[in-house]
Image 1 (tube, one colour):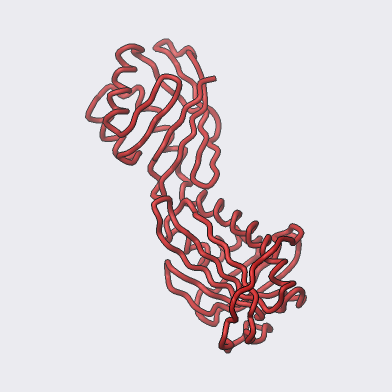
Image 2: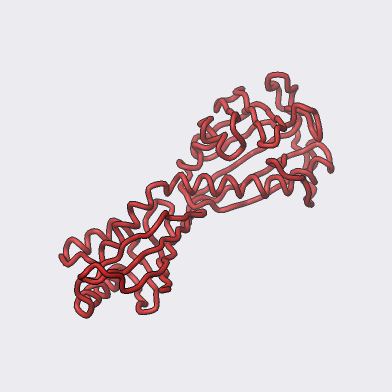
Length: 285
């Protein structure tokens, strides 16, 4: 498993899987005893478990992190079909599904190398954490060679997964970024405070060349001071929002009352798993 890249890396020896799991994927054979070699990896994804789990149950989302044409039938006995971008095909059978929490399936390659379809077991467990979801992967394999191939393979594949799932969770952030920037021109204190509460967590931190605030009340007072000393100032987003795993970059321009640009910069937004803003750091150009 290498997602279109060359395999490589190291690994650790794990205990045997134990009892064989009966039932083969179409053409895949049964999971065998003696899965003595283990790959384990834990990553934190900037999205809630219910959002993440859709990428194991919806074939369109499943294909987004494996490769176009990949499919999954998310029920015990359902088929797993993986088409890597480099043309390699793999597959298996779903063994267990606990919605929002856990999925297990067999895994192997149609070519039989380095392991045949159905000859290893993958278990993924999701746990909610403050920054989103902790994903724990456990892949039980029959040989040391297979283990070596899959260590770096899973490192790459789960990085793709984390990016795709977080991007899906925060797909509407551009509109929220526009609303946040618009607060600098909102002179109604009640409306501004309500908008802040809807957009950000209570502990929001805001930093830039002229700002150092902690919490919504502090930032609200800071914006009011901006309006007093720089009346008519407004901020507008420039270009597309760039996102990566719960962090977004937003370019903006500051305009005076006459519409003329008075400055520009880029802000870094760190997002909570529910999409609210946790931290903003602004860089004036």
